[in-house]
Length: 109
Ligand SMILES: C[C@H](O)[C@H](O)[C@H]1CNC2=NC(N)=NC(=O)C2=N1
Image 1: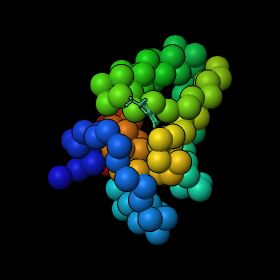
Image 2 (image 1 turned 90 degrees about the horizontal axis):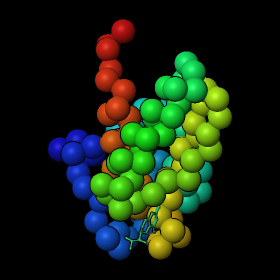
Image 3 (image 1 turned 60 degrees about the vertical axis):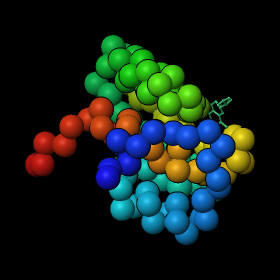
Image 4 (image 1 turned 135 degrees about the vertical axis):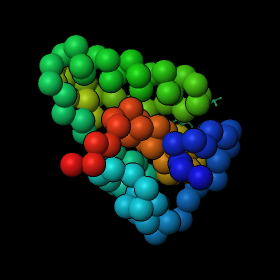
């Protein structure tokens, strides 16, 4: 089952660091594990596209009751997932990152 079809669960346990690095490289597109954070910066074409992405991420966050930190500029958005209650990365962070990746269909070229 792909990560993006999983749902976040309350009180997910902290993942071992080596497992987080492995899961990011195996199942996510260019997300970086940095300590207790999973982050990626999206470059967009213009402000409208940036805000559309921000709203799509807000929809995911609301549906999963799991919320990222966002840094928003004119044509970029830095997304940081971390599970505050665990003080670490949990599977919930990876599920939400995969759901964000799924907003961008892969064209294969
Ligand atoms: C009760 C509710 O599930 C918690 O407050 C959630 C909400 N969103 C959250 N988001 C993130 N990123 N980490 C959390 O620990 C967290 N806790």
